[in-house]
Image (cartoon, rainbow, N blue to C red; front, top):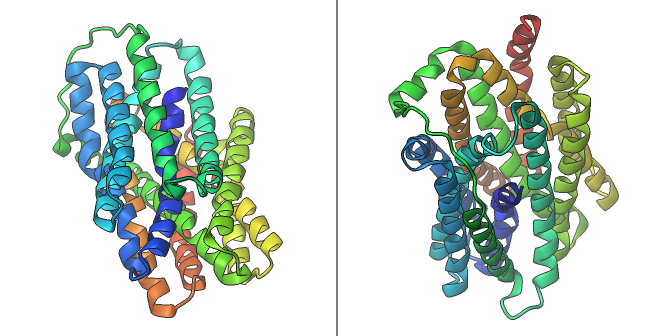
Length: 375
């Protein structure tokens, strides 16, 4: 579970992006948003090589490596705080998080029974959401320290090293498995399947919208309500709190409710939240719209991931690696979002852009219903 907590560290990128833009006033939104690109591009570059590395040295060592890379990433801004070093730091965050995302779930299968696996992974996502929720709160609480908001990097570095030590000292039996031949070509060939292609693009959209919302929420609160960045940053915690609650409740409901119905309700709920964000001017209504979107968004990744694995159970490992590659969406959409806000001079343009992108999730309903009908 500690590993899932470390996995949530990547979500601090939204707060960090806004603080960097505030500290380096000459940066435009489009340039500042390159931080997210420097982080999430590694999901495309490192996901499949990580699968290959797991086959050679084992899952535990790969997860331990991810903790070390994450700790190193957190030290960089403390040594030299500049825009270039922040790009380097979040590149390392992206590499560490990619390694962790690919390797941690398979490692869990070594310590729990098959009957407990689904429940354990759901609990892991809940722990990740809690970590994401705590990030902005920690930033606000350490703002008055010697390092200012950057103190969170020291906290995350120490936590990552503790996770490494705990994992290294914990004996985890790993069965000797026959080495599988994994390559970019073999994994990317899955995109020839129309369902896998559709779900892969769904992951790209989901992660891109998630990171974009993270970047945009504090700016919207500052623009609409006149708050300073430190106070406006709490909007990220409101969002992650809604996702935490949504993931917990969704995990229970999905035991009884069909995935197709839950998916449809979720995308409509999220759309309502985005539409409210366009028009709300009051801080309370802005927070309400954030909560509505967060509740709708919370379980969509899990639903798409689950349907993809069920569609091709014989190639589950390859499907998993490919979907992790889709997390590169978190680096693609934010720079485009920055161009929109720079061009129109308002964060409303960013939300309208995200609403247009969200339309893909409605198109994807056809694929979701089609698979649901064959269950």
